[in-house]
Image (cartoon, rainbow, N blue to C red; front, side, top):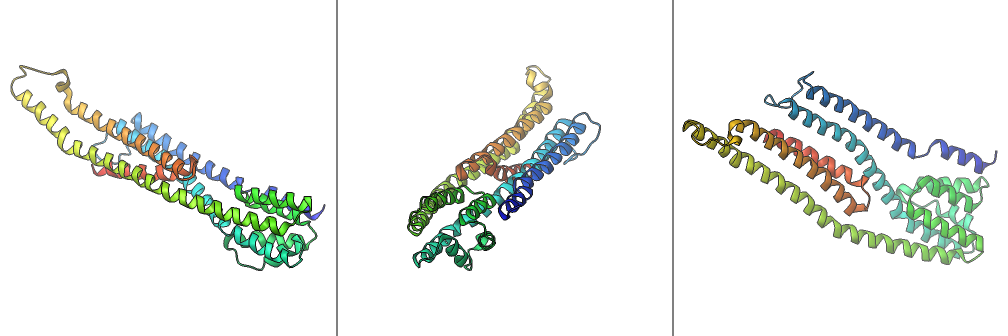
Length: 306
């Protein structure tokens, strides 16, 4: 088996997607576990209340939210961690391309330029560049080492850059000029992406603020409007019931249902707003799960205090 085949076999064994599947498996197990606890509370088989006054429906909803947190928390923060690593890798890619291009202008081949440039410091990108240089010294062609590098890193930007370099090398053109142009274009794309994210951060802040305003509004209704409803019901009852509203016959139960409706609305609000924040930030729904996790935690503790 050649060195290239050995490297490809190693890549298949250590594919990054395996860890993602493991995280999804753990998150799904947490969701099933806490979801089962929620079901047991719903049928009154157990009484695991967050507050002493909670009924079975309230206990079910609270544990269902905990189950949702158990699913979206690990997966959402793992996706965010991968996103940060991708950004850290892509951030230093233009520097590496520029160094390879400079080495190529001194008459070095692409393979020699990569090996020489591997002595630099490129942050998170450094270990992968050293692996690529080691493969070249073992006899792996430079274009194949670049493909293996793209397979390991697995980011859209690295994939595009490697494809351009490989095509240019195969065509026999001036790779140094191509590397310079690709480095400049990659840097410009990163600056454009930074500007977009700065602009979108304002909208993400607005989403968080609107969610907090929603919580404050519910708190005001809970401490002012709902107690007045109960007082009005007591006043009507003390008059002898000459005029009775069907709603006033079981007003404490109605108030409790209103509070449950507030809680459900807040949970839906937090989950949806978090996903929207992720779409605005990166254009992908999974990146919004960590925002949803944060908002649901805030909502859970807010209702416990309310």
